[in-house]
Image 1 (cartoon, rainbow, N blue to C red):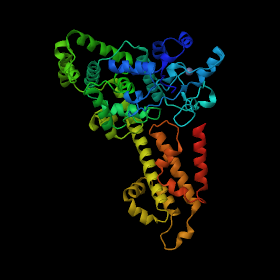
Image 2: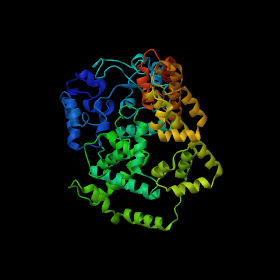
Image 3: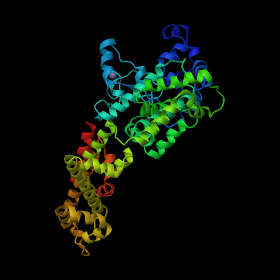
Image 4: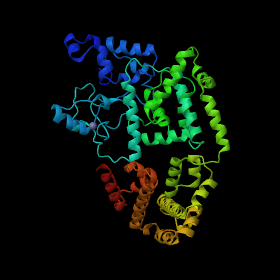
Length: 494
Ligand SMILES: [Zn+2]
């Protein structure tokens, strides 16, 4: 017996059926199964109903592609701590809300707070327990800081998930309509934004925001992987992809689930009129054959129009680009992200002296952090190296600091061993400790400056300060750095 998918519902005693409803009612109204209906074939849906009504689950999760899929087959119980309190006041007891249980719902639709995950009924603990939600079995996530952009994305995805599940059992999407709708949306996006949108890069950054949340850890976060992800949904119509896979793409390219449904209806009505269903390649042809239905004509005229028109940035991209410049983002990354040339970026900068000044200051700050961190890391990696040796090891870093940050560099080199043989005994451990603290603080500042608003965790710091592991291995040294780490980890918890 599992808590997420029911089984053998037909063997429920008549009394239970009278209270809970027929197996059909239980499946469609009280389980997360309806989320898996719409992108599946009719045969597979019949299989779902048959299995959970008459049999044990057996390999159903495998047949649905969950076991081998990127979102996993585990659906931990989830609850919102605010709902929990409200339910107790209202009903005297807290219960598991169906809307919280769907994979991909991470924020309570009612309270907008992060939903907590239950520690019971997991693969590794207390499986098959009858439990009701209480604070002590729900991991407390409600107070975790979450940046507004990420919150918006999580809300949109959760909303799409719930909307899909609400469609009910009678709605099935034809795979070829789905692919056609995706292809049309992607083409429109790039036509309407004059090529400023790179869907792959967009999906990758979208996925990057979602990735810390269960079960979204294995989303594609590089443009190349995002490209493969998109292709797998847009090339050949498929019936067996996980609904979340579709919903990630839908939320990214349509923004709202309703927009996707609208696009889908247009293709569905086309299909109903004249497109017979036989080959798997059908969806692509349905898109390519579009001139008869008026899409392609519009597109072509858009494209021709675009060639004649002087390049003008859409206001929303202009704002985003200005935001990047104010933060001191490198010109090349802006070029890559928004598909505008460096000369356009230079034009934007030179037209606004304040912006230019802000960009230069931020740029310098970031470079300063970057070079200082690398130098301090170098010292940590090579605790016995003299300034001369380290200079030979990191010539570019040394040169940059020598030219741009000389006072700091000189103060650092004074603390380093002089290079004379045998002075190992004279290592100034407290100076080392101070340097390591500085390195940790710099890495935190850097990750804040790059706009990462996630709580800084120990694992982040270890990744950002590569020397940290090695330093901390010296158990009697670095007391200040240890205290600093402790404080950071504690404050991340609260
Ligand atoms: Zn709630």
